[in-house]
Image (cartoon, rainbow, N blue to C red; front, side, top):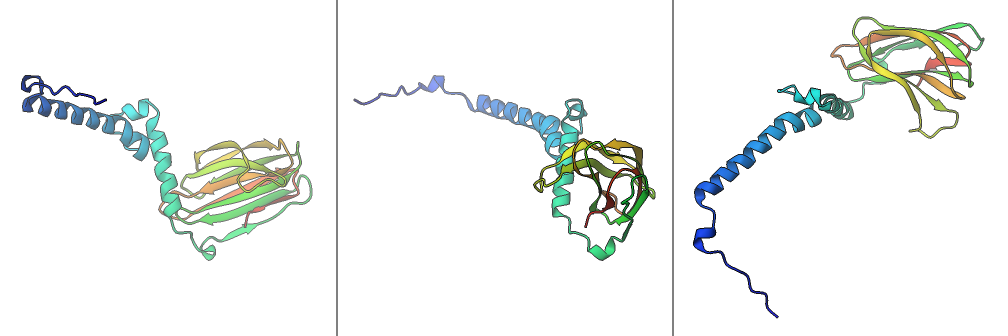
Length: 197
């Protein structure tokens, strides 16, 4: 059995003017979507301000930062001098200083038991850096961790109590175009407080 298609009559087809108008409308809608949603969500560029109002711009900026970090050449180990002191006696203060090159990230961790606590303060020599206070359970897989706090700052202080046995501390990332030195001190109950190699 053959299917017969109805061929439209010449009067039923759209005119060239109607096709051009439909094409222009479609291009206009695409341009509006590009400027108001795609650019903010993918690239962190928000010319209208609508992307920020919708929460798309921060997402795009994080994507761009992650993309830049994944393409950045790692700084040689010799260019990031660090000094670290470990504390093995409860209550003994510990101090670590490290210098991060542009786009370099490093960690300082304390080895703690659940319920152990320390007071801390860290600061940069001038510029703010991105940071994340987080922890890994003892024996955790490489990508298993719990994030407690993150943001961008030139310094933070407070008290931290370990919710589980493991390592707890900070990851800092220098997004500045110049080297940044960070100094962190901690006093409390931990068996080790040191720069992660």
